[in-house]
Length: 188
Image 1 (cartoon, rainbow, N blue to C red):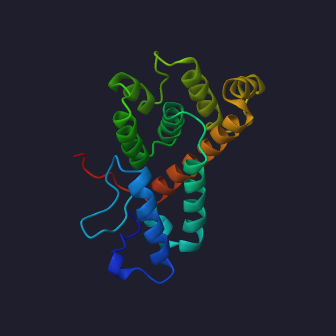
Image 2 (cartoon, rainbow, N blue to C red):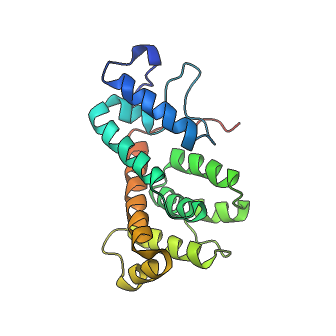
């Protein structure tokens, strides 16, 4: 870890409201995996965001907006997130969202394929579109037009927009995790 964890009693006045907001949001949306140490210091992408509260708050606000305004089904969102995490080989991202996907009932076979950056054989039509879309978009360049049109016909324009922003958000999260070499806690 390239940035030390910040214990709650060492937060600056700029960091404290962001920390409080993150803890509240994490408790309601990200509770399937370990997010803080014994002292209450936040781990994962939240720690780097706390180190730069002006930028961290903007990213956190985007994360909350993406969660609050989600229209895509959870299984579709998790496939997209895991595709991006695998593309970036972001260890904490994969750790966290494997735990979320397991909690939501995703099979071990499907998870194994996704984290290996492979396409699972048992995807539904919607999951298949989400995989192909996220896989193509996370590799750079313009998303192929047929794939874009397929997403619009499958998820509608709003759902397609959400999928684009979701891939972008988790590319940012993965880059944050990799750039700061954020470690993965032991699984319980």
